[in-house]
Image (cartoon, rainbow, N blue to C red):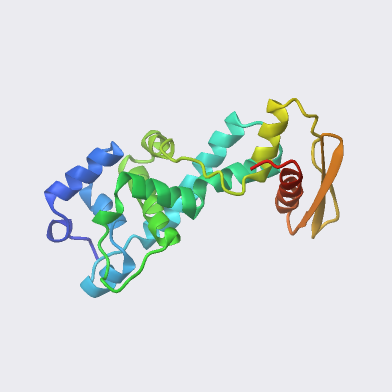
Length: 217
């Protein structure tokens, strides 16, 4: 069912959202749909943001992956961890909270929202901007630039940064096995190992052990 935003969102709300995100929608219905939670949609017979969220997740991962591939040196494990630090629930939720956008979401009173549900709004918003701009990635990239990478558990990046800063010799990761994998990393003449179901997970575990031994916080 087509969303009747005139009955749900005020003109003032729409204008304020557009001001916050720095993008003016041609089709205001897309903007409004991005802010309609499924609980509200079911109660009021309107379209929710779930399809936008699905599409936005793919757009977000593609654009951030592209950005990292072009600008970040390192192994596949480094890129995957950097990606996770930008597209996971924690950094996206933090951005939504910082911009104070969640107050515009229409939802049932009895629904509670954790980080993941809050972060879903950003994904829906990215998709709405992409569709409204007729596939122009520029406004999407502008929104993505607002994301502040989470430094939690970024062991691969922390170890790399520490070794470069302190001129400590660090080897490239070496792997054995074909699932689970085992990774070996040498830092400062000492070898550290870690296991995981993927090469990225194994590398992260090895770097975690190195960070703990080297007291890298």
